[in-house]
Length: 115
DNA sequence: CTCGTGACTCCCC
DNA sequence: AGGGGAGCCACGA
Image (cartoon, rainbow, N blue to C red; front, top):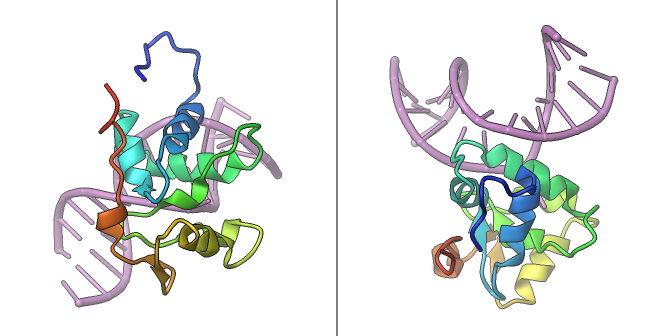
């Protein structure tokens, strides 16, 4: 989906849009999403967006978003300590020590199917 | 309006 | 190899 500069979509709204496009069994990183949005250094904003994601009407698979190391940095922000890990496990994604096993293998590049 | 903070990342020492 | 600083943008106090 191509976003025009006139698009009335907020930055974090775009983040949600990208995150929702992450296919089953795939994960991506904050930095990748930020880069896709045109601000490689704004990865923190992606995290901020995820923090607010639970308030969104539409479901946002935040558990598919991890840091550049494949570590579940935001697992503490879920309702339970192991919710994020459990969700990933249910998608055939192995998690060990709060890190995604074969992270690169499950990595999904935003924009890969776009444009 | 200014300051501090954050589910991040990169660069430099 | 590991720690520290800067950059990014939004939001609450």
